[in-house]
Amino acid sequence: MRYIEIVFDNSGSMENYLDNDQRRIDVAKKLFETEILPTIAFAGDTIVLRTLRSSCNAASKGIMLPNDPKKIMNAINLIYADGGTPLYQTVQDAVIACKVVKADENFIFVLTDGGDTCNIPMDEIIDENARKWIKEWNVLLMQFAVDNAVTQNNLNIFGNYIGATSFSVGTPGRTSDETMRLDLRMALVNSRLNINAPLPWCFDSKEGPDESWQDLLNQGFTFYQASVLFEEGFLSWKPSWDKIVSPLQKAEFTFLRGLRFITALPKETVKVMLSGLMAPYYYSPDCIYWNFSEARWKFHPIQHPVKFTSNTEVELAEDNCFAKVDFNSEVGRRNAEHYFLEEVYEVAEAYNFLEVGFTLNRINRDLIRKGVKTLKVGQQVRFKK
Image 1 (cartoon, rainbow, N blue to C red):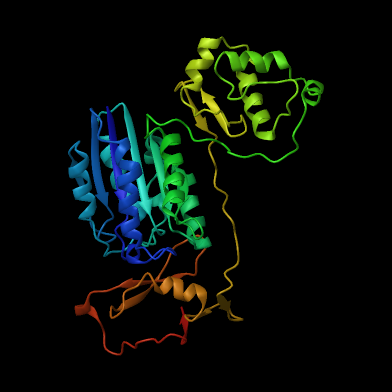
Image 2 (cartoon, rainbow, N blue to C red):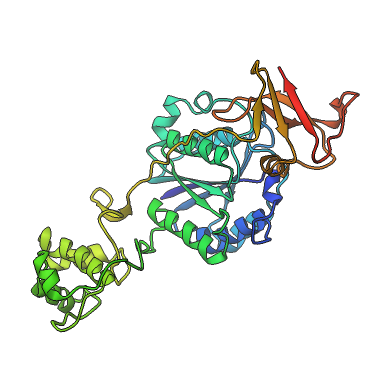
């Protein structure tokens, strides 16, 4: 029995467009339908759809969905983007929900296009006790269309903190439908959420010279081993003394030879192990490994690096008390996309690891004070503490 929490970002920035001229929220829903939906709604699955908190102090909405793909998509299609991104607290809500259910496996799938906006340290929200629980589960953190280096860093920090498999989909240059589906599919397979699909190839091409069999013999490969692997139905190409071997053929031979001969596994054992992979077997031990406790192949986990870079869009004054931001800059325009025209925002102190120490919070129109000024593109503002 699996308990699956789907945390779906419904913040206002999901209304923005990818570089393929499609709205983020529309693409996210389509990816859900094509890649995530086929991996859930099996017998014994309990599925909860959770949207982000409407505010930092409100509770998130978790809706238990029926194991019916059509009804699940109906619920997904009803999501609309109109809020902020209380990411840490919404994940905390999912953790609390997972703790009280009895399930063989717990999954938390988080789709977000931005970092947390509540300015509360993650370790105050998800403490050490919660981390002990969450690291026993399968958590996927999908960074959707996140191209800001600071936001990527913050999400990588959060993913590393909770032990999540963090991956990116929809980054600039990788927004074709096929590419986004492939990126998401690989993460779902590796997380064990997709229990039926074989692991995608590690590569489908290899650089290097073609080699003769004499070249391979000098490296310790034998023609006999290749012939046996072909006869047993593992090797995709038939060895021949008078034909050269391409780099891709050699890579497949190297992987299969390691299983069958280097580790001396029986034919039937190798057959069972390869059932979780795709033929031809374009894999490498540098890319995947056999997890004995789960009896399946997995990609090596990636610990996302945190890059400390200077913010070229911020100029600090000599006394370090002022920050001048050009809203006509690239970063200014990108950040402006996360706010709504005609709405009023209040400057608030921000807690974040790498960003400037202020943020803009939308406020209730009834609380708007007199003297609010409207900024125009190209104007510069200075924040003083």
